Length: 336
Image (cartoon, rainbow, N blue to C red; front, side, top):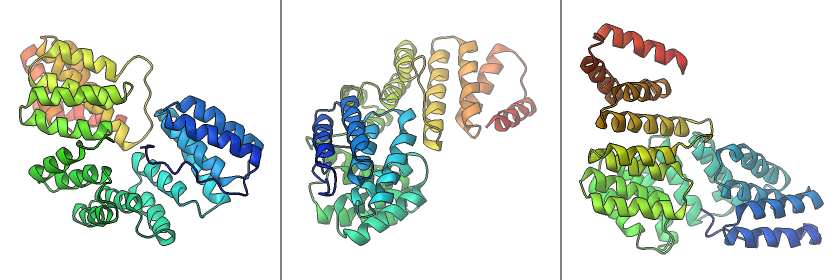
């Protein structure tokens, strides 16, 4: 996310002493030393609290921590930056990314449209606007924006990823795979690219290639839960319950927290669903039932979870009939 960051976008009105710390912050981010970057940026903000550039870079440093607990702080810093200096278009870009990650594509779209009024034709803005449109339910419109982004910058790798997501929404899997396979030829590959293509390979039973992509995603970001979830899905597809459980415990280690958003709620439901599959494959029905119940507590509208749970109850001989299952679903809905 930060590989193309405009590191030197510091306005001359920023205090010269603060600029020294901002330069150190940008250098720390380039070395993937996010915590040091936060420390440097906080010092800059302490020296010049009226510098929009300092607040913007501090917001980006918080995002680089890749911690759900820091998203609110990142959002606050980016908003403060724009309050101080509305011309910080990259602040709008990063704020739009925060809105997309927290389930507000409408607000992301508004920020990006405003950024494009100031800087029309910037490929990053065009592509992210396409992703906002996709999340608003307009994949065809999204592809139009992605084509404009590629016209502006043919080497921009993330456009292929976003275009693949739009093709997935349109049920055009072959086109999606082609976009993803093109995207991983770049030296600048994100975990999302590997994981999305790996999921396609898993569905097509290309398990060796899928596992290789999962391992590459984990190498890029060992703390990312999605990578271990994809690895577990790969193992569950092969009936390897023990290996799936090992991966899932890494996806959801003790003390792991997630931001409050539809995306992270769905992620946790996905993890619990795979726990259910893994425990069932290992012949541990009670643990599987508990996992499916947790999945449904997070997302009651999962037919596969209801089906698997009912089958487990049947095999357990607990006599859970369809009406009782409906009542259970109603109780789980009330917990949401």
